Image (spheres, helix red, strand yellow):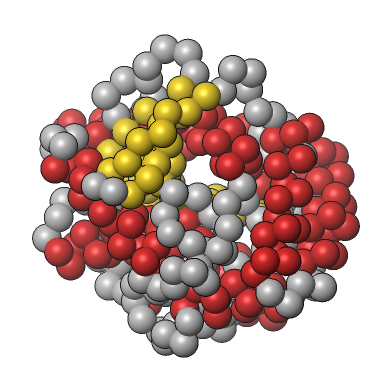
Length: 306
């Protein structure tokens, strides 16, 4: 049973975001609609005094989240969502702050190149470069946590797959929130939930997908990492709402990772929308952050035990 705050948020999202997205025919219009997310601070819960430091990792721009005392020697490398085509800086910075605090890690947001100006595989190249650069700078892989929501969840999993292909070590773990892992959009939830999802309609998702792929096949495992060999990856935790068009991506990820001997912890949150963890005024979002912290602590213990 979802909280009253979640039910209220669903109504706001349906009216303020989905209802307007359905009328968009191009990415510029979509970006204008999504900019409205930054105005939902009553749900976002942006902490006072949140700041960031501009940086780059081998030329890939990024932002280190700064608030309070240093969080330790672990790094949370985060890939924001946005359908590969847009950013919501205030929303994602706030979420990264809370996630970093619970993970006891320094949070850094990768500002990868966006489609349609820079289609596939530009974003993946930037995310992989950022991870490889941390390794080259001497950060041990067991001190790196990958995170990502929606399109960023796709990029996090694809980065792990590419690391395996290139012979690079896996990170300690990955935290994924409503990841978009199958760009064929050929899932049962894409059909069943197409009218129920408070955030996205199927047409808007297809517009974003097509802008990212730019004619490239969605069956490429680095574009749709659900189609990749998912063996020998770092432990993965996934949080997804039950009302999402993308729900089945998370369900299938858990099944395939476990079938190949890996660790995948999935929570489906009843009555919650796409990337509900962006809205930290929801009790469910705060609980999800706490679960992520416990998951990372367990991964650290398992890594130390060998």
